[in-house]
Length: 240
Length: 298
Image (cartoon, rainbow over all chains, first blue to last red; front, side):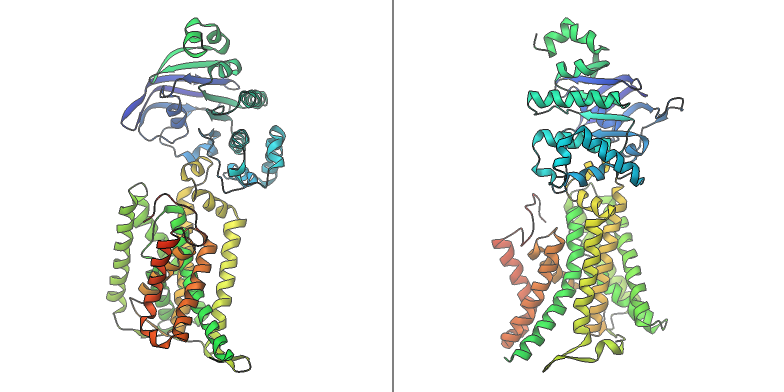
């Protein structure tokens, strides 16, 4: 579904990503794992069109059987129209808008009213807490609720590829479990998921395939289960 | 002072305040989205007034048609201004955009002097607007004095509907807090910013057209003082807030008219009141009446 070949990203004068190639299979959950500064976010932001100083190739095939289309040089506002949606790091909820307005903003690229209403219903069924708070301002939500809103908002464009940048950051363990349970559910309903995480254990547990990054390079890849068992991964990312 | 006199002053204050408010809205909306003080905003008002002058005198259009065409023309100018002078500097330091704004202002004024000449010109006043109207008892005002606040209320109503009840309005409110995230959600930010300039310029032109009815002449520098004072009104109300701009504009109208009414000996300092107000606001409540705390201020 998504193919990245030899991606280089410069970010603030440093080479944040140095020749990464990876691929995401349709219907899977793929995760990028690594420490701070390993280049995970740079990759996901490049796919979303937020980094300008990049080179390499990114190909995306929205529907099965289509010709892969290059994403290089596209603007971020074009991505949701091509079926790619990003829930950014730090949630980036619009604090002065209501929960429902945040969600409607996620569907900004669409004009099919009935379908939008149906997707709003779906998001509310995934996150019942958001329905209860639909009139509250985004800024008044707790961290966990804001994360749910960020994921829900990203779903409102009805993406085929959902990208989540550090969805568990700063959340209590119970909430982390809840978020990952929902990621699994979203995937089961047919969405391909690209997940960037520092919480390696949780991410590897849900992922079909994973890439481990160190200073801008892929150092290890494999299925989630394989990497959970790998002694090097255990030592470096899973606390022995 | 008699009650009749006082009421008459109130009407005048409301009219002047409405004119300030319409201009202030453009400053505040552009600032809210781009953190830019669009110093050329006052000149849009002048251009709007000139368009009506040419529409009525050169083309012989009725005043109403000329006013609508002028508002459309001035909106277009606002959009062009953003495209040419501000968009290329979107990612530059704010001071660069500010300098660009001052340049645009000088450019429009100089161009107006060349094209329209510096000669002040009289303005056509529709009969029905300049006839007297007896509100009650001894309170007699020009119909214009009631027309301006009424028109302002309608325009502000439409504006609030757009901002709070439509999709582009939702996008505007989102951009004002976080451009990058709003783009990620699929909003074509460039179009929304152009739309914002379009609305702000339309309101400034509406104000300029009515200004030219009240002080019936047009000249190339007529936008400077109202522009500066409306900017002060926007700061007073809390820059970035539309409601604040309206309140600030009306408040400034009352300050000016009432100070002169109650202390006629100070009328020569009339223009200075606004600036005294600005200094006081910046000293004691830099965020204005309804403004939020902003990290950077120009």
